[in-house]
Structures are given as C-alpha cells and as structure tokens.
Length: 603
Image 1 (cartoon, one colour):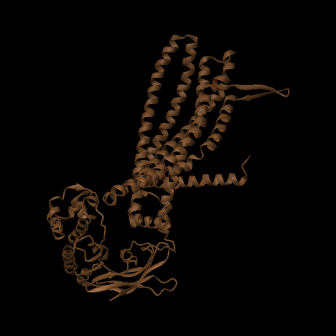
Image 2 (cartoon, one colour):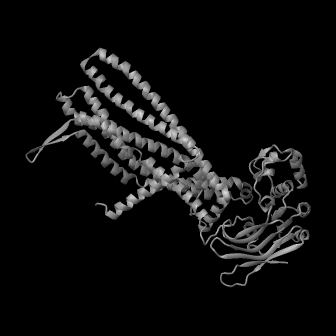
Image 3 (tube, helix red, strand yellow):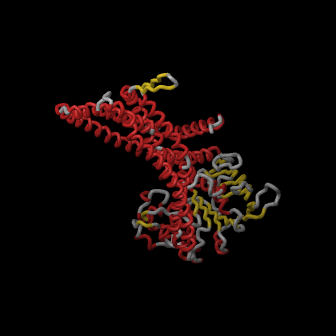
C-alpha cells in the first residue's frame, strides 16, 4: 500500500514543523551573550569530528597494507606498519578524548544557559503563578504540566540529544562521503546475464549498502514509531509521581494527623502504576525495535565478506584488500544506518522537544494576553498618587470567565484601618490578589500610591518560608545582610517569638518545623522588620489565641500609624473588628446576566 500525496505532504509538514521547533529552541543560545563561546566550541567539535573521520580513512588504508603483509609473510612491512599503527592509534585517541570533552562542555554550558533563561521567564512577572492558575482553570491535563521537571530534566535531555545527534549525523555524512569512494573503487563491478544480455553494475557493494540501509531505515521507522508518544508520556508520569512524593513530604503533619497514609499510599501506587504501565509499553516497543536493529547489525558484519568472497577465492583481490572492502563497507553501512541506530534517541529527543516547546508556548500565551483572559498587567490603567489607593473600577472573574466581584469608588487613605468581610467564597482573598496585580482575570482602573510597589506588603494565612537559615526566612525576600542581628531579634520579640532570637543561623525547613501559629507570628515579624506602609492581612492571625492575636494587631496597627499608612484585614473573629475604623463588605450582586456575583460596599 502506497502513501497518498496528502499523507506524504502531512509527513513533510510534520517534519518541517519539528525542525522549526528545534531551530526556535536552539537559535537563542547561539545568538545570546555567550554566542562566541558557543560557536567556537561548536566549530571545534565539528573540526574534531572531521579529524576523527580522516583518522578512520588512514586506518582503513593501513588495514590493506598490514593484512597484505601478513598474507605475503613480509616481516619488514609487518613491523613497520605496527609502528605506524601506534601513531595512528594515538592520534585517534587524542581526537576522540577532546571531541568527548568539548562535546560535554558545550552540552553543560548550553544547559546552564537554557535553565537560567527559562527560570528567569518562569519566575518573572509571576508567570509561575499565572501558569498554575491557567492550568487549573483548564484542567490538570492542560500544559504545562510539571514545569519543575521541564526545567530540571527536559533542558538537560534536549541539549545532550541535540548535540550528540547533530554531531552523530554530521559524522555519518562525512564518513559516508569519505568511504563511499573507497568502497566504489574496491568493490568492482557485478556482471550477470538477463534475457540474453550481459548487465554490468559498477560499484556493486555501494548499491548493496544503500539498498540494505534504506530498507532497514524504513522498517525501523514503522517498528519504532510508537516510542515517540510513549517517551512523552513517560516523562510526564515520572514527574507526576515525583511531584506527589514531594507533596506528601510537605504536608506530612496534616496527613499524619488525618491518618491519611492508606489514601496517600493508594494515590502514590496509582501514579507509580502509570509509570510502570507506560514503561512496560516503552520497553516492549524498544524490544521489538532491538530485535530488528541487532539482527540488522549482525547481518551487516558478514554481508561484505559474502559478496566479496568470490573475488578473493578467484585470486582477483588479496586478503588485505578483502579486509579493506569489509572495513569500508562497514563504515558506509554504519553511516547509512545512522537513522536505524539512533531511532530510540530520536524518539526521546522529539518527545523532549515537544515538551519544551509546549512550555515555551505557555509563556507566549501569557504574553499574548487573550481578550477573554486579560492579564492584570495589561488590563486597565494604574496611576500614582502619593496619599491614597483609589479603586475607580476593579472587576474580577473566575477562571471560567464568570464575573465574581466588582468594586468601584473605593479608597484606602493613610490612617485607614479597613476590615474586609463577606461570605466564604465571595472573593475576599481574590480582591487582594487583584490589588496586588497577580490575578489574571481582572480589569483594573486603580490609582496607586507612588510608593505602593516598594512599601506594600501582603500577609497570607499560610506564609512561605524558604529552607535555610532562620535569618533568611525572616528577611525573605530581601537578603538577611540588610538587617542587623539586633533588628532581627527585636522583630521576633515583638512578634511573640523571642525564643527564636538565638537560632538565627540554624538551618531548617521552617515551613515544616514551626507550628501554624508560629508561622503566622514569624510572618508578622517580617512585617515588623520591614516596616511597610500599606499592609494587607489575609486571615494572618487565624491560628493564634485571642491574646496573641490582639497583641499582634496592636503592633501592626502601631506600625502603619507610624509609617503614615493604612491597614486592610480579612478576618472573621469579632474581636479583630476593634482594631479597625472602617469596613468593606461583600454583598450579593443584582443577579443580572453578566453582572458580578458580589460587589464591595464601603461603610
């Protein structure tokens, strides 16, 4: 059955599309600030590959002279050629060692650049947060899944496969060009009679090598094609399994308190079964391909001897020439079989390329800011006023596009202490996200104080603390060196954590080490240390007892007063209301189609 023109065209288009993906992922590094180092290394590797092929040509010629000397029992030539082989072998070893070293160096530098480049893009402009929001909005199967794995593993695989496969292809092409002429001149012609006429095929072994390898390449593609999709899924399943293991470690206390070990074991087992199930399919596909490729390679060992043996036994060629023919055929066959030998690597490379490309496309979709999902940075206007935060209009939607919350005509002035209240799920925390500019589904018309970006601070209910010294967790995200030990200890003491003042240099996972109440007090210590002017508190004292909560609010209230700023809090406890002089309340909307579910009313 032959392919239709449309099928052939679609395959050609698929190849062009894949080549374009590789080019778009490759070009930035070789045009970056490291371009001259990268290009220099690449040129050196190409030169060494050419040198390696040249050494093989010299060794092929050496085979003929050496084995002819054996057949002729010529001791003088035998010993002379052994000495010559020493120089050839040393030259080949030298080329091979530095080709390996420079190839690994290029892969390492390219990986370092790509990793740094994508980490900057992932962490820049809250892209890591917005990508997660969009993925959850579209379903957990939507890309990009497991960006940590794409940065940590896929970048490494892409660079190593790109360099090794491209240099392997170059080596195969140069080897083919170098040895096909040798094989053509040595193989002679093949004559046969057909329908009373004598036919003569010059360079018969060359044509046999071409036919042999073309048939092998076509068969390899059809046998090994399933590996492309299997490799793509394997990387995803492995990352999902590893991600859930990390979550069990992060939430170990909650899982232990809930006696959730059987559930987590079942979930981990399901994910691991997906890993094993896909891997079993992958190794079965690789087994089928290995059956063919190993048989293909073994047959190629004896094939040139079978074809050239009649000429040797007739005396037309000597042993050295027979060995040279077999060696040249082997080199030509190896070059033409590059596709066969590297199909599994090509399948893994394509899967890795597709994963990084989808990661890249996710950044581009953020930058494009579709009309139905406007980004906070692109939608609306923001001005600067030195004295107040004014909300002319703030419309927030859910990921599916349903209008959630609307606010107009609100202001936050120095001296204000606003309590934000409303039903659970009405969008109080989302309002904070909209004011911070990190909620993608927002239309904003705000007048922000001139110092808002540098002097505003948000205290969430569950704060984040990096693993490391306590002083770094307290000063985060600023460097701890910006503050003296006395300042750090004073902030801890004011946040009711004086006992931690002696542990500033202790390294630990503080998000797991401290209790919920201690974590909230440590977050309050950050605010007391950094002295923000505009402070947003989202249930940040919910884990504290009433006395501790009152003490912290007194200090936070005094802080914003001293800074001539304002405080806005989300809280449900009635006692917290005493520390505020204004109230914003989320009330149900009018129910009209397209109108928000809730609106903010100032009191």
